[in-house]
Amino acid sequence: MATALAVKTEKRPANDSQDVDSNAKKPRKLLPSLKTKRAPELVLVIGTGVSSAVAPQVPALRSWKGLIQALLDAANDFDLLEEEESRRFQKHLQEDKNLVHVAHDLIQKLSPRTGNVRSTFFKDCLYEVFDNLECKMEHAGKHLLRSVLQLMESGALVLTTNFDNLLEIYAAHQGTKLESLDLTDEKKVLEWAQEKRNLSVLHIHGVYTNPSGIVLHPAGYQNVLRNTEVMREIQKLYETKSFVFLGCGRTVDDTTFQALFLEAVKHKSDLEHFMLVRREDVGEFKKLRDNMLDKGIKVISYGDEYSDLPEYFERLANEICSRDASATAAAATPYGSPSQNGDEQQNGFNTQKSLLQDYRS
Image (cartoon, rainbow, N blue to C red; front, side):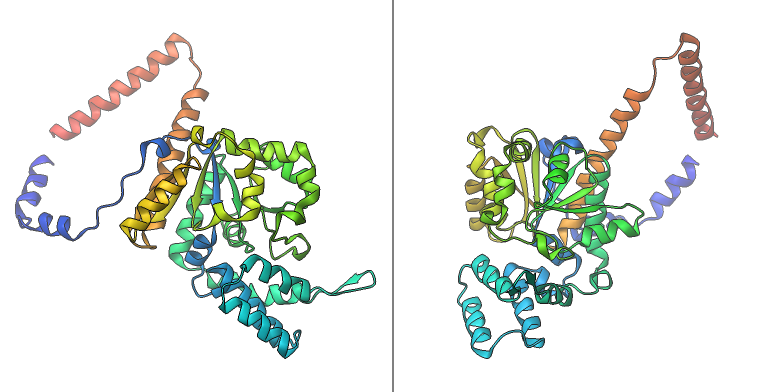
């Protein structure tokens, strides 16, 4: 066997390995302080960057602006706005007015109340925008969701600022049922924060399948904000766990995220959170890294291209989950009787001896 292997090696052109090495992209190293975390120590924060990677053909998933434009287009298609109203919303969108306020005003316009009855026009527009997401998911994006699901099944929590349910759709196809939560269900949110609902995704702005739970401003969460038990449990996560931001360009500037986490935590320098970003412009990257350090967040580059994220995060998830699995197996293995341990050692010796004999032959 050894001789055959040597022959194969000799026949290979000497410069082949050099060519491969020079052409292959060197993967980013995993940061030790992140890859040595255990899955139950993590809260994954999923932003628009993940959704746009999973279904890049859906403009509404790429940004707040894309979502508002898609809702506005749907409203126009269904003749839900007067021409003047439509022009006004379009102008505010083009001028990059406060997008949260623009979205809030548009939702209010699409949700008129007559007496005690509120219309379902907003729901109709949402379903038009997010229709058939399952058919629009791309292969590379599914790899990213697979790694997120892998960490969830090992104990990580997940929250998102996104309205879509791409992760839940993907998990269902893998035979895992994930529940979509929003902040209007205080009991379930409390259980999620207490790690009693690990296989749930907390949508802090709501999810499109439950339009009544969609809220864009912290003022809309008055019940939750007044519930000190729920708020304390949610905020405790930011103090005791490591948040990993994926596809989150502006999440820390999000008013709801700030109300739930940042404003409540005073000693941010003691925290250890992580933000995975694309290293495009060196100056901008350094600026972002400096700004995030003030919030207790380490900015890490997963590569130079958006397409580098799935591979990077897959390596990270595998590293964390394999270590967790090894630790669990070691903890579960009983310190059996001396004869049992002796048998295992003898079996191990016999296996090594057999392998050695095979190699020599």
